[in-house]
Amino acid sequence: MEVKQVKLISFSPTGTTQKILESIAEGIAVDDVAPINLTLPEGAQQSIPSLSDELVIIGAPVYGGRLPVDAVKRFKRLQASNTLAILVVVYGNREFEDALLELKNLAIALGFNPVAGGAFIGEHSFATADVPIANGRPDSRDVQKARDFGAKIKEKVAVLPSPEAPIDLKIPGGFPYEAEGARTMTVSPVTTEDTCTVCGTCASVCPTAAISINGSVATDIALCIRCCACVKNCPTGARVWEDGMMKKIASWLNENCRTRKEPQIFGIAL
Image (cartoon, rainbow, N blue to C red; front, top):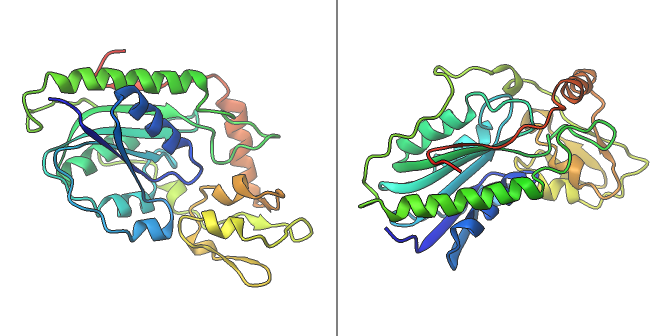
């Protein structure tokens, strides 16, 4: 089979997953690459045509060893018909646990035929300059591995007789899925008023519309998914964590997840 079109379907609050997907597409090297970004609330409502004969790369970050709940909800709007898919999760140098298996099972239920999968590393959502956790990743080495991954997938697809060809993609993980604790926390970053310019950047990047601007910044804690897009994008550094438990988690990650992990690839050999 010849790959003529690639669609990039992403949930990527801080942009690390999107960067990996784009790098994989660069390795596949086709002219027709169409992004479908489901991160922001308006993206979640866009009309998505049924997917059929293109190659689709689906990617999301890992939150507490699982897919983000909102990513799952948005991916469930996809409809495929034996569409070949590359599955990607991006995690903050701790573990990806059941997330990639969860994505595989979800993709199959939506009508995709997973051809390969990858678990890549990105800067952790809780990372800061003072408390680094895989800061700066994906870096140039990660990007090159993603490109190599894409090139190998193109070779694998080239010898498939049809999109319906059975592919026995083995993905690590367990079912029933674990790691529910991090998904049920109710806490959010706060705004330091003396450094906030009320520019609205935080609200514009929030995937769940948890932040509103009306002369000041207000956060609906119940809607916050702790992606930290607001923290990482605030131009004055006014969005910060003050919650003691979140600070402890970030400190633990900083101390225990310093050893560099490399991307793990499934379905092909690099």
